[in-house]
Structures are given as C-alpha cells and as structure tokens.
Image: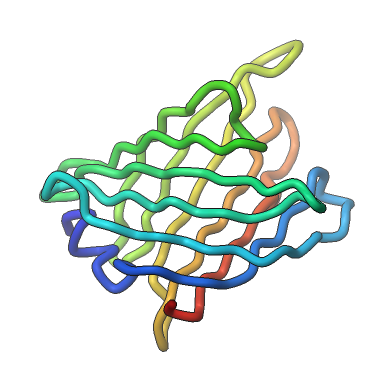
Amino acid sequence: MRIVECLAPLVGQWQGVHRQRLLPTDEFVASAATASVTVTAGEFVSLAYTWSDGDAPQEGLLLLSGGSGDEGVSAVWLDSWHSSPAWMLFDGTVGDDGVVRLTGSYAAPEGPDWGWQIFVAPVEGGGGRMTMLNLVPGEAAYEAVEAVYDHRV
C-alpha cells in the first residue's frame, strides 16, 4: 500500500497528547500536542507535530515516501528535542495492519550505534498514533514516546 493511501485517514489538523520518558524506569510525562498531516508533491506524506518539554515548546517533522508494491518506506525525521541539530534517516514497511514501521540508528557517545523505531498508524474511530522506541544495544527495546492525535481541528 502506498504511503499516501495508508495515511490518508490522518490528513488534516489534529490535537492530542504527547507522552515521553527518557529511561524505561521513568514515568511518562504528558503534554498537549498537535499534528498537521499533508500529502506533499503527490507521493509523500509529511507529519509536522508540536509538543512541550515542560515550558519549552518543541516541534518535529516526519517526511515519508514509498510503500507501493515491494517498495519499502523511507523517511526523514527531525525533532527539536530528540534529533537536533541533525536529522535521521529511516527505512521500513507498511504492514497489512496499516501500521507504518520505521527503523533508523544514531551514534552513541561510546560503543555501537543505538536504534530508534517510529510507528505511525491511523486508529479506529479517527485520528492517529505515533509511537517511538529506543533501541539500546544489549537491552530490550522500550517505548520512549507515544503521541495520540484524536481531536480533529
């Protein structure tokens, strides 16, 4: 399924809740969130979003392409808190369940690169969910971010 078909139910302006934690033993901290999902240049989907870290506003952008036939999905991701000042590149798939699954990696201060997964999916009843997992070498993957956009603006 092409990425524009998969994420068509999300096109528009949304509000919701962003929850994040730094470590798997930390409690999630919630903030208000927005998302703007658009089809760009006919074959790409952009998901621009906002959230807050305490009183500090944050923003991010996920630009996705592909997903037709045997072609996988590619993405570029940037986030003022998580990835700044660089962006990350991702490869992935669109599952039969309509979930976009992306995986990328980033350099750790010491040792092997760490991984980052992003899952994007429309949810039943309208809206969408973006989940981000941190992949620490030698440790179990853990959910670092969950954003649920369930109120159309």
